[in-house]
Image 1 (cartoon, one colour):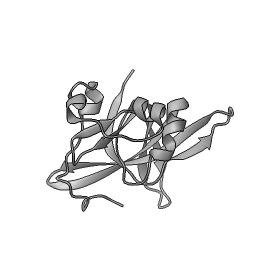
Image 2 (tube, rainbow, N blue to C red; image 1 turned 90 degrees about the vertical axis):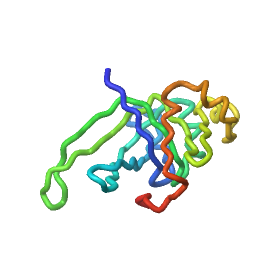
Image 3 (cartoon, one colour; image 1 turned 135 degrees about the horizontal axis):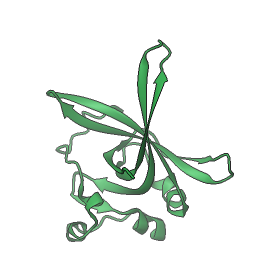
Amino acid sequence: MIYADISGRLGADAVIKDAKNGNKFVSMRVASNDYIGGENVTTWVNVLWSGDRALKMAEHMKKGSAVIVRGTPKFSLYSTKDGDKAISVDVFADRVDFSNSGSGTTQSNEAVAETGTFKKQHPATVAAAPAATQEVVDNGGSDDDLPF
């Protein structure tokens, strides 16, 4: 199975939706910025996340929140209104972590789901965290390059 790790910021608040089978899931859009050929390129990723932790954390997932998503990617080809071909990137999340790129702290979904509140961890606890949570992007504290 292929896994993807996506670091970025939420483009809007997370939304809880109903699946056709009656289960609930969380839907989010994450903007991931890369520097390619000397210019900033933003990729929008649709994130779908289900389970108790997802539903508990949804209220904490606000526009602009820095997150790290680990999950299975799915790529779909579609036609735009103008008839051009485009690719949609969806990730079915197994894990979502908050990241605070300015202070070097990370908060895992387990801690938020259990406490119901977001609490910053001491940087020493981040070093002991799983590898997926250590991929914090430092943009120098500037939000000027965000697409929202």
